[in-house]
Length: 254
Length: 279
Image (cartoon, rainbow over all chains, first blue to last red; front, top):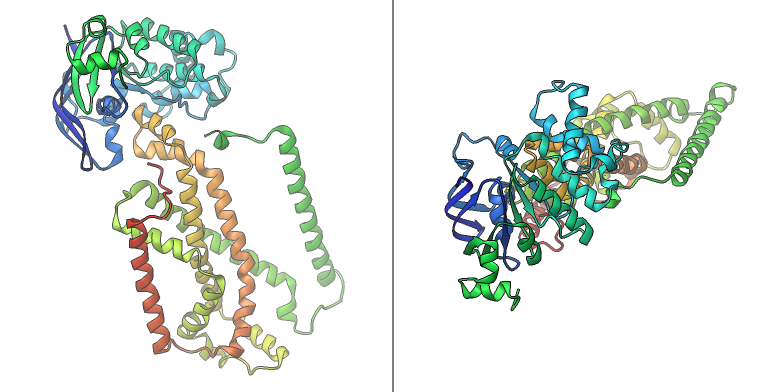
């Protein structure tokens, strides 16, 4: 099996506080892996390591090795824009840019290509493809000029996924993608993830264990900055090896 | 997040536009009246023509306004962008400047007048050229004397410099607030798509915060124009405050104030009263 992401003894500090302690993890290609654990256990931090958005906070120290698509992302020759192009990210609250739906989808492409290199027909085609693959085209094809922030939350979140696609990422990181959505929206986004799972590698952080069970093939349990257990989802939920995992998945706390 | 994106609805828009038009109408009527009185008839408003003539004063105001808006607003906005977007929060330069800005934006405008009287005017040599202030008592002589100042362009530069000093901290504050109002998720989404800092700034932060930046700059400018009445204060204060070079005691107080303000800006960084940071 091929792995999209591999870490070796990854530790991370926010100032003096150690948020990740010697994490070793291998995320397999082309499937959905979920990260679960109580709040503050480092799930989001781990997720944010993989496209290096953590570094924006200034007081972050990272030690260890992270290989994304076979390349150590802390090598000096790694370009951050290229890394973030290959590793897309979807956030907790849908955060489309306050511009039109059309421009939202092209935003990523525009910042990565030189001015004027995209023709109008190319743009139209890209937008249509991206929206079709997130099942939004039929809803939005007549409203492409509408400000993206005026859409329903569910549509906004799908749009946030859609705008990654023109960049042709390999990996999509999702930080609690459904926590701001209602049941219907959650279901729609989950269906979307399942539909896209073959093409992209998904890594999702979720507080919703039912969701982890439904969508993911493998599941990772984290506790206080340590990776406790990483197994097939069904096995992890039915026969957890570690007592902490058992406590958590059987809702005894957390 | 929503307040930033909300647009006035058609009714509000109509109301705002009519208020703006009404204001414009009233102002242009006033200006027209003034012009008609002075230029379209033979009536002179005052015997001291150069001082009371509205057109040079109006032009002077416009020229003055343009100069301070160009210098002050440009400097303020650049400064705020540098502080907010480039310097990390723990940087000592940022901490020092932010402290000073907070203090300066709270300084009453009269003190700027005192600064002009005690520092700028004496050291610029404007007094030597006009033999000091006129004796107290005769207002007519005073206005004549003021008019004799008018040919001196140094005074104009002094005024502009003072007002730039007055405007810059306010513009910096307003711009910083505007930049902080851009929601973090908005920035993060752009960064996560691989935008670099410059792209995030130009395509994202600037368009989002521009309305607030402009509003802040306008507020600072109108505040500056309002206190330009302080010029009168300067001329009148000439009777009570003897203009002269900084005395030893004044320098001592100035030094003490400077030390205290620097000290307090570091202290406020260490023990912030209210967290205005967005991270």
